[in-house]
Image (cartoon, rainbow, N blue to C red; front, side, top):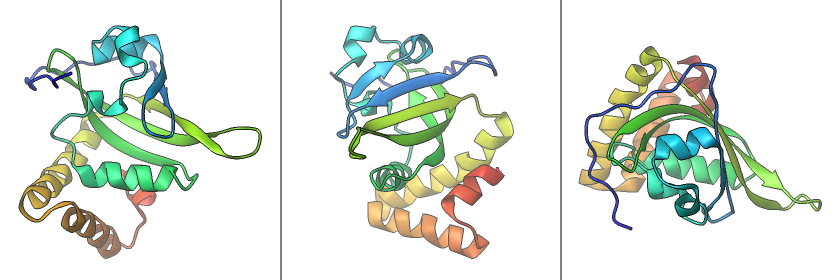
Length: 167
């Protein structure tokens, strides 16, 4: 399926609403609550089995997703601000908490993401950083973008989680 062309049309949801989705270990969607389905703009049967990247907005730097996947694949939780792409080309921002799901033998069998509505101030705080990461990725590649992000965190003396939670 060809990704939609982004348009400048923001979708919102209420402060007390929560978006939930689950994926297998490869990132294919195994569950999405009604709000996830609604904001994504696909039918549930189109989302189930599709890669979660179906809603990846091109304004999102790959460095953030690399950090996210590297973290959760090690069984650690991560928080991130993410701009998602709807089927109609619109977008919506989320504050995501992603964790691993385990079987009875403590083997990771998938990932669970719970997302809330971020504030405008939080979005503004990450937007500039994301634009810089994208610029670096386009010019010098993913590794350079990740290095920039890690250097930024080191210069502030914080971990990624501390930085995100301080916004």
